[in-house]
Length: 80
Image 1 (cartoon, one colour):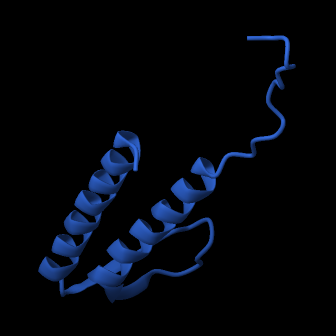
Image 2 (cartoon, rainbow, N blue to C red; image 1 turned 45 degrees about the horizontal axis):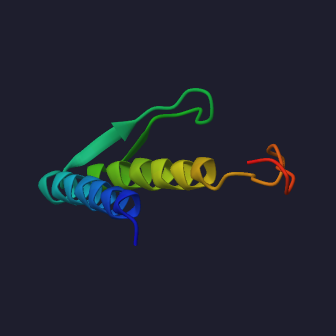
């Protein structure tokens, strides 16, 4: 494994720890309002909102990091 991959893994695990710590500390109900999608206020456990936002962020990061490749500049054999 490269140093870059290990660093990314450590950062991801640190973020996961923070989210799980927040989830463990917030057991009360919380109001969630997102007017563009939801017409009414949703009341649910705070841990569900935190974990859902973290999961959306991880998914979005994974999609952004999975580059398209292939459309970049190709080099010929004579070019160095």
